[in-house]
Image (cartoon, rainbow, N blue to C red):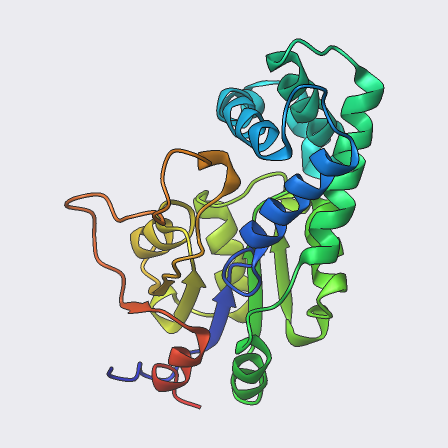
Length: 255
């Protein structure tokens, strides 16, 4: 694996790049439905209903007034998602939905873990490069994750969808990241797990890319449908590198 020329900065996605968000989410969903059971359904069955409700609800979010609320605070849409889930099984109970949403949010944060090589890699890169995060999601949740994982001290620049009002794959986000370090696109590396949201836009905007592929990178919203991580669409451009652990970056970035 050939090393890149000297870079001016390295940016990371957060969820399922530096930490196991999907694993935490799956555990938290089971725990929430175990703590607040639905008569006649197992927790596993309710996770399947949650996944189906998510696939119906999530694609419509950006076209609603709820999106502006979601950007700042993840609780209302989390509770609404649980409400959709309950209605799939004939239960219309806002208090139950809120209890599920609160437990899910708390346990997801409690279950969150850095990947085992994350601190080793951040320590090595931080000694020679400015580091940054570009992450999508509500401002409160993303800031909470950074605090829970004690990550803020590692990053010179943090760009969160909920704070900017826009997220990946919008070009403006990448331009802000370029400008704050005074770098050209070809002087930057983006490390992410999602081809659609991380890798493809970074390629389009001229950045180097490291696409991290892990077998665990399967969201709970596809429960019962597939056990395979996201694949690259046929004919789509190749990332600069495909890696399977963060430690591989130490062979790519000149320290």
